[in-house]
Image (cartoon, rainbow, N blue to C red; front, top):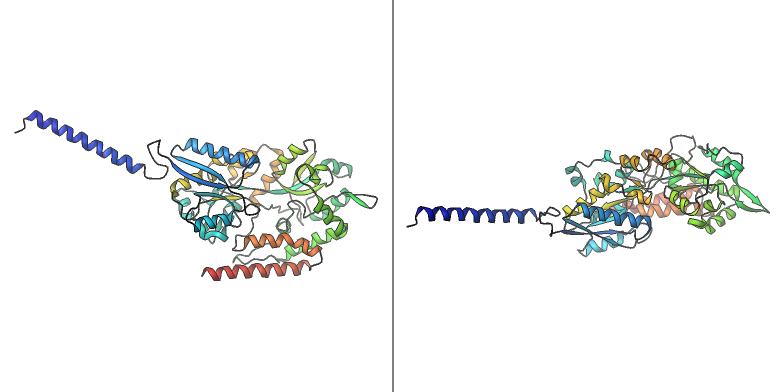
Length: 440
């Protein structure tokens, strides 16, 4: 028989053993969720694909990842540079990785083309809803370009905006008010004429070349009030107002000589040899990233920034590009991936690193804090809420390529503005219809 002392001793020992086992079980359970381990030695490692290797963009990636890792001890983000397929896209590499069962956990990608590889993406509609991440936190263009058929495919990360840059010294020389740049298309034409200079039959300076820089047909099509897609998702690249924009560009080129203008554009340099920097071009459409380029390559240039002119001189808009952070299909660490995506895209700290690149955050409140006191960013900021994004359709990349070629086709005598845009419109809608049929 056990005496009372032995019974009490054994009872105490049994309770202690149960408590130890119970706490061990809880510890193992809590560490099983991505990023939620209480054991600091156990980290969930996620791979982050991006295509910004060097320069300010590369620095912003490096520093933002470092900050995330520092503030999230149970997640380790490994940034991996992946060269783009072309432009700003790594879509083909993503499709290959997903098909092979080895996708990255998170990827930086251009927004406008993501609908084309939506089947390789994990939609974040429900994840965003669970964390109270809503579209009113972002600009309409940012949320809209990340959405396809009411499904949020990814979170918007940033934005790039366009405006009219103009040389104030040239304005003074031509008798124009440097503090009141043109706001109408008619005023823009008249200013360009006064600013253009010719010597011995050759142009030494152009006042403006509408399609140079960021003067895409998207840019001017929206400025003229056009719509590139209707409410049903049908592409309307031959909208009458877009046709008018292309006619205006064509007539502008004819006025100064198509050969002279196209030769100037084809020989134009970039950065330090950009004709706006060298004084060979008085006005141009460019993006907010050009502010830092001017500071680096032409610090003494006296210039201004204004809205892109419209036919009526009001209802200003801007062509907004940008990127998303998406989660590929088949990732092994969804919780940790989502934690990183929402910190980068829907968190003030993560979004603040856009200051390094001079590009805009996708969240209005963050931009006000980053750029609200910068006079050169003022026009960009003011027009951002009315910015326009490229249509999110199943042939978005093709649409971009075809519209980019349209001005050259018209100027090289391959067709009229109406005819060229009719052909493009038919081609894009046919491609979309074909892709939808294959999906069904």
